[in-house]
Image 1 (spheres, rainbow, N blue to C red):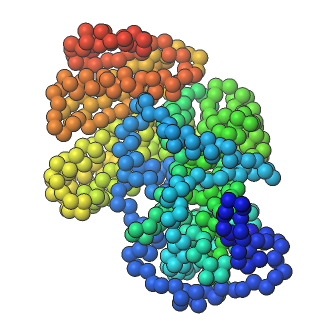
Image 2: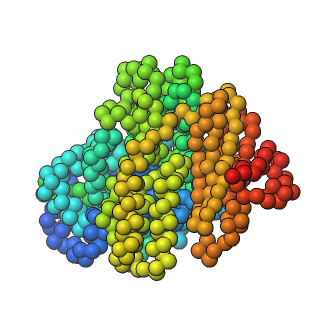
Length: 577
């Protein structure tokens, strides 16, 4: 049903065509009015080409360092997230606001499990959702451009097949909406994304722009409550992935599309157009979608909710006992299936488990020999990890372009910090020159960038052993701190049985106004101590016997010993040159 009704204190007052208040199967024998695509298009006002290009061929005004994690999503995460990466590993005292607590509680209370599927009610900002326009004119004009582009590449039929499969699986449904009622629904422009890597199962994917808005309007993403931030937990997960002998990887098939929208009103906010033959067809999603800024939060929260009902573990898991890992795979698969979540793209460095995955039809079918794990490349055969290979433009010549290129390397553990930090140093030099975003940088800067671009592009040739630590062995952590006039930071090495491995590193740029070197050395030590609880929590299954914070700056021991550092079991020592 997709009828419209007035909500009063005494109830709902429906109005409109009676078919609007019947389910699809109830009106299947009634004659439907076909919407001729050409006629509808002729009545649709033209849009400025720049606005259409913004949707169909979006150009980032800033680099997005989260691409390697959320490459399928068109969620606008904002420039501030790039700088939030500076805070990874730093504990925060920030707590949920009253609004967060209220919205999260309302969302949790809305979760229901019906007909083998989870259903949720979306959380909105009441003052904003009423201001979101229909956007039907924009959606039709964007569709016109998408059709032209895909037909030139002979890909439009393949694009339609994705939606046909979704309709067959009950993810989307066709709705009957006469043109005069387009304004009563929210229509989302969509475009294709072509993925040509071996790790992509579907080469053409639709991406919906829930951030689309006119100059003075509100977008659907702005009106939605986005949920709480979950990124730090993923960093901890990556650190834990580097423990123990055996590893288990798994992905959830079409995870977002497995969560249904319980409210008819919510479904009417995720409508879109498709052209089939000569007719225009109206559809809407019955699920959350890629491109909606609350989808990552909703998925993670529902999985947590499901885990409380059917206990399961992380989908990235390690163990020293291969049989236990195999049993875990079976248990997780069975319990996720109870929530209609199916595992896919599974893999392991344990050959017997690989065979079981193949028999179950869940083994990754990619031929490249490596898998993606939270932004890194992982080879299950040789067991190393490395960054995903960036393709840096050596000829980048503007402040905007160089910033975008330097952010292509996604290395949350900072294993490649000695190289990647040079990008931040270069950007600071460019900022000092007070150039506009699209000004051409001086030749001296271009020369430095060309050298750096080649080094960044070759980073994936350097790999690290995934198995850095083992549970059940005594471990020592060494925090090596240092500073210069340009930057300060630390690197954490873990030592077991005389073998050391780089676990985590962090660096920050020195303030532009300038600080003395002793002050920066102290800041490096402070940063290390500040990150210590995060590291210990990430390695909570590892037996940590001793922690050493080491600096080559003399005179700090008396200062630090006055603090309650003994609570952290830290032995501050000065490494003499």
